[in-house]
Amino acid sequence: MTSLATNQRNTGALLVVLSAVVFSTAGIFTKSVTADAWQVIFWRGLTAAAFTLFYLLLRGRLGSEIRAFGIPALLVVGLGAAGSAAFVTSFKLTSVANVALIYGAAPFLAAGLSWALTRERPTRTVMIASVAGFSGVALIVSGSLGGGTLAGDALALFMTAMLAGIMVIYRRFPATTAALPAALSSIVLLPIAARFSDPMQTVLAEIPTLAAFGLVFAVASVTLSEGARRLPAAETALLSTLELPLAPVLALIILSEAPPLTTVAGGLIVLISVVWSQRRTSNVATTRSHTSATKTPPNGPISAVSLRATRERDDNDSKSKD
Image: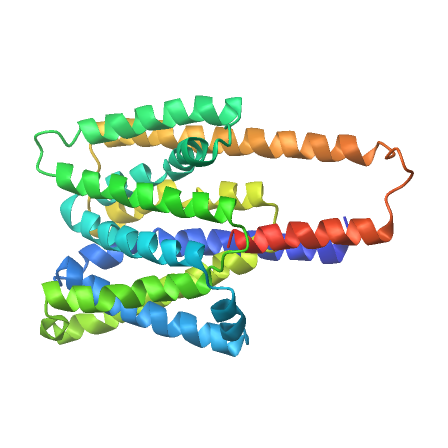
């Protein structure tokens, strides 16, 4: 591997890890203020949308994103708005650990939805990991029965389903834009949040914190997309799992929020399932890549044009997952 490729890979890994660290602070931001969920949604969304649109303008991509905006992107806006509302509200009703670890099962739910809607059969590895992952989620939720936090867990599950739906859309329609739907999903929630609460009644001293919440999450989204361009998809997914254990740890350190034993046990099952499935997928992809590289195609060595086309397709696939 050349030094340039190594630097690209290291930079990509650093960016993805940084985004995971930032994403793990969602519960901290939400629970560190007295503002209600809709007030948090309003100020977070306002800042996130403004930054994302500014980023698109700065990169000269706003026009292309508007032109590429279609029905799949519109569906992403709807699912993203519903998921964001449930995401923030869930933190107000249950523990940070429960939300983060239930959210970790999103790839498994996406695999199930993809099979149900598009008949894309999941691999044996994904099916085994999904059974284990959902068992972990069931264990986490069981700890909330009778404890007054079941509504928060239900919202976390709903949010996870929305995220899984978005994953399926991008898998089925890989040319779907990403940044503009993210900004629009925040904008859509602004009048809804203003209807159910009064953002102007938010404690003045808390508005900078809520604005920072939206800003750092928009930056983290950009950081994740930039990092994903430099790494294989499987490695990006694996590094992103850092968010799962980090969120409960930060909640324990900063909020003194200790998760119950059922959450710890269920969370470990989810985390191990995700890491195991990603590593298995990555190993299989690497083995196939090495095998195909040692074989000469029937029509002779692959041409430079074909190789470039393959790389461009891979780059486009990577960008569509941002």
